[in-house]
Length: 437
Image (cartoon, rainbow, N blue to C red; front, side, top):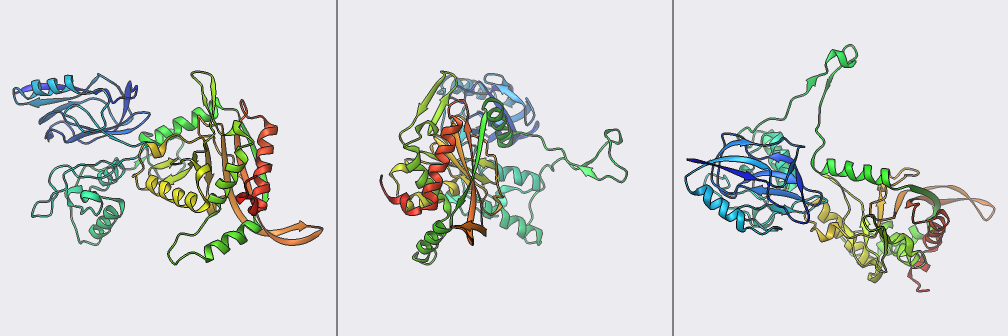
């Protein structure tokens, strides 16, 4: 027997270190070559790292949340004589940037961040267990670990037997009713009573410590950087969307049964396309390293989307070339892809301005945080009917506030206000959205 030290490989695209999200193995485990041993996250991608050899795990380096430099020892294996030499040779000949599994590489999944691993063995034994690597997302693997579920027992309905969220939820519900069982996995850290010396009130309950890692850590980092580095200029304007609501309802009434209804977002996006022609400084990116503002003629909308893993911003590209229906369909497609971890890297990068909406939870106003390196974000709040003064009389109108934030370094307050007022003009007179000036 001999020992083989596997070092964190170069994951490409300028990566110098990676954060450990979760180990899939522990000392004493026996693994086969290409079994996933650890999930890590770079600033650009969530990555599942496969084992370069078959053998027994002797030791691992780092805990979830720890940063490991490229080239640092990651895990030590005990292998058959000769196996380590083959792994070293494979490591030496492996390409620097890897997008497919190699003996020393990593399975790369999408970020912001998601997962869409392909090519895993989804065959089954006669007893119902999967053999080989189970295809699913890192989020489901984490849920399975916390729930003590052996994923080999779960039937996948996705492509090539991939386990999707509905498969996992159905299995958990079935098991809870006594219809399925699975070998217990390592349980999460139980709730611990708070020490008396930290000010727990008499009769106080328990607390739970949740380490900030993975996507949540990345969201926290980017939000902090945006607020710390960007002087936000917030602007909120009230809009009368009564006519827009009438048009929306009319168009929805003509749809075939089962066709998704139009929301306000595609109308807003189309109106914003019109407005940005006169305010190109808001459809731009700031390259801080070069000190350059990059203005775009094409409009690539980021659509802020809440997912089970956290906030993601899929992109609708070339909105200026799309019709209302095309915009609506593409918004639905990319947001659903983000929620189900099927969005590609290209679908999660490259936006030039972002639209965000909390839907029915939109409240009266909000102060959205700019999605750097963009310089502007437009936020939709809740639309409600209420009495207003119209032409000297009280009338019931459907009103909505539009909240926006601009990078005050590059978009002056006057221009930001003028942009929103021009957008208001289109929204309150929706026919103008469809008229080329």
